[in-house]
Length: 186
Image (tube, rainbow, N blue to C red; front, side, top):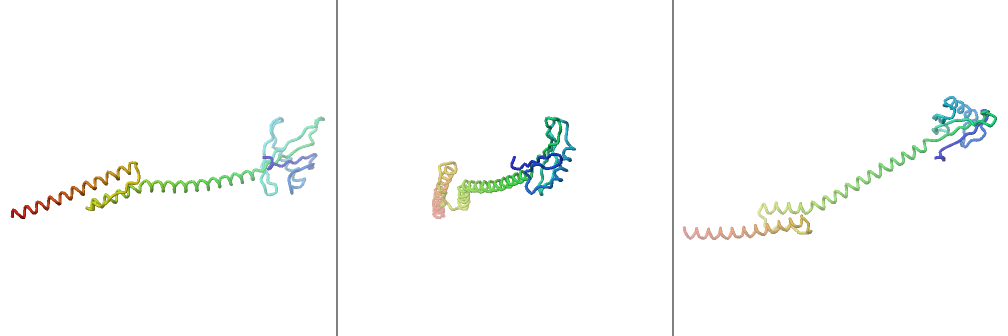
């Protein structure tokens, strides 16, 4: 981004203009220009980037010369582009993503837990009633709250419990009759 970039214009080792606030001295920029020019590539290619530290901020620096119509190259430039502000923005974005991911995971877990609880509640009620019926309590009924598979299962369970209750009552009645008949025979 251009807002993170600075430029320094030089002529004969002197700073003509600079956008660097609280900048380095003219000698520092002249030295930096010389160092960057020493690493320059072939004519007609882009100048290489050099990492520099100015005012406790890290920059990529590129240097080049302007050739005048008469062929001399006494004018030059330094382009400085800060990469710390971009990295700080990236770190803020990463922190936001981590926080959002954690919140989404917690929210998703809570929703799944509630849905599982809602789905398994009728099954737990059916299980408790089945245990009671298995111990001989035929008065247990499961409340039918829906018309889905769980509701159908609850209705069938209630019908089965009613049938078992009637069958047991008939068995007890026949057992009484048999005991009475046996007592008469004796």
